[in-house]
Length: 362
Image 1 (tube, helix red, strand yellow):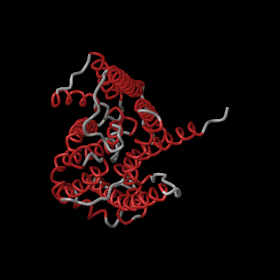
Image 2 (tube, helix red, strand yellow; image 1 turned 90 degrees about the vertical axis):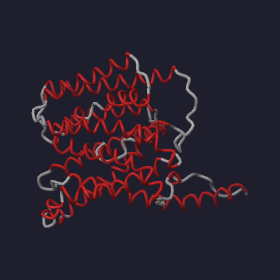
Image 3 (cartoon, rainbow, N blue to C red; image 1 turned 45 degrees about the horizontal axis):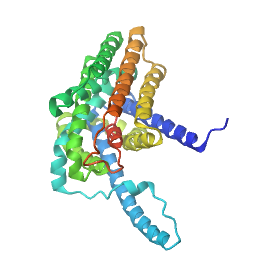
Image 4 (tube, one colour; image 1 turned 180 degrees about the vertical axis):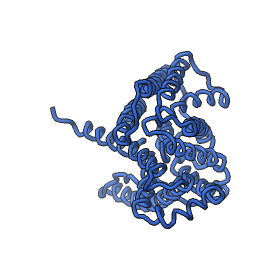
């Protein structure tokens, strides 16, 4: 039976999400630990990707500004009986005008953001790609813990049971990892902490940028680009100077850096597209399946050693995450909650949730 146009569209969107997400992780791993390409300067690599994202936000804003003017003109023509009022993809991108007062109000979130992406890339640097999913699996545990401690959001026994499964998978996977790195694992746990804090701070800061997640992405990356500079100067300047005649003079290094930066920006777009093409639940299921495939591919592509306990830990973590998604969706469906006072610009809170992963390495 031939696939309908809708099914084809969904398949293409899901395939694009998988390609961008897996490629981003693999590219960042190569930039962090490949002997011939990478440099021992993870902060510099992360800073450059923030700069790339800032540049893309600025250019997308310029195109979006032109698209809005064109769209307004077409609407006038359409109202007169002619023209086409079809919306442009770039209408969602606001003009990237920088305001110092807004940047100051976003700054606390940017500090958390810098911690999140720094520890995420440090995790990738020191752990095997196949173990990366396990190393960063405690994000939902910290999400629930911080939501309770900082926001007073209650949790249920069923959610607690799912979190217990995730923690069990984390312990089993850690114990079964042959090339276990305590540094990488601690970085993964710290990344999970900052991802959770980033979620909470994002909800508080969004009203500052008129609930526009693309404006927030722009300000976050501008602030991060500045915050990284003193850290790079004091911690990595010697490494960078030494690499100028080697990796930093090669086309492949800068090509990989540019592509990784582009994918870091693109993951937010493809996540939202997948949610709109399917559903929030299907998006989470797709993400779980993608993580499983990503880990299994790593055993072959990166030559990671596989053990029974290591693979079991991966699937227990993913199983617990999947059950958590089902439980939370079920609990949300049984509650009759009022509409949010400050919805994201696309009118879907889950679009914002998807954009939590719109940065490097996620």
